[in-house]
Picture 1 (cartoon, helix red, strand yellow):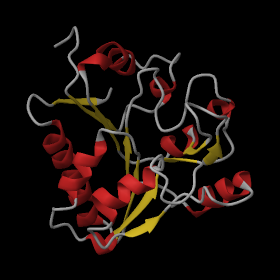
Picture 2 (spheres, one colour; picture 1 turned 45 degrees about the horizontal axis):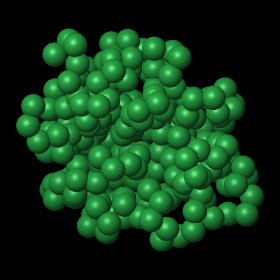
Picture 3 (cartoon, one colour; picture 1 turned 90 degrees about the vertical axis):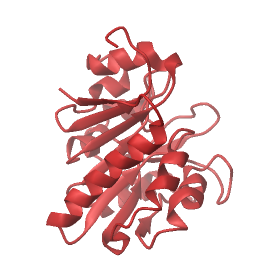
Picture 4 (cartoon, one colour; picture 1 turned 180 degrees about the vertical axis):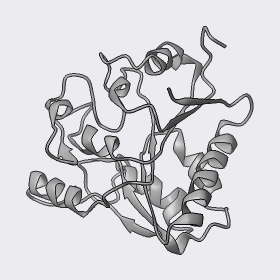
Length: 218
């Protein structure tokens, strides 16, 4: 069962604290730490706070969980928000998803092959339809079992490159950051590991959820 951290006050501050603690623990026992980050509206404030911490960022490798297929600098790109909120401010080593390559499937395969054997920390968000990363309901990517990265069908205006379930199964720690009382019902389905939504299929044993979403359980 996953751990749950209820953010009664400032969600961004609480979530940044959870990520900082996870990074600190990893850096204390490993020469390099691999972290994969998602996009979305919620995490930018978290990453801005994370950028102010006095971690040894020279020893951190940052990968992307998912990315929209769009031109460099496009406002839809997760990397734009990641760069502005975090990557421009810390000396981490960065590995952006190659979504501008002409052969996207080949690029996705190469990115998957470049991933470390274990991602130490993976940050995830939760969509109102139960998607996480770019693992969306009904997409064939949900059934991918032989690759760590794949390309989706169009979803809300864009195809996407995303980590697949096998990549999450190899993660040492998963940190969910979920904001909004409007997501209370879908958060409960996540807590129950509801396999009918993509998020419910993410391993829970090494996961923590930071949320301010209200729920029937409090």
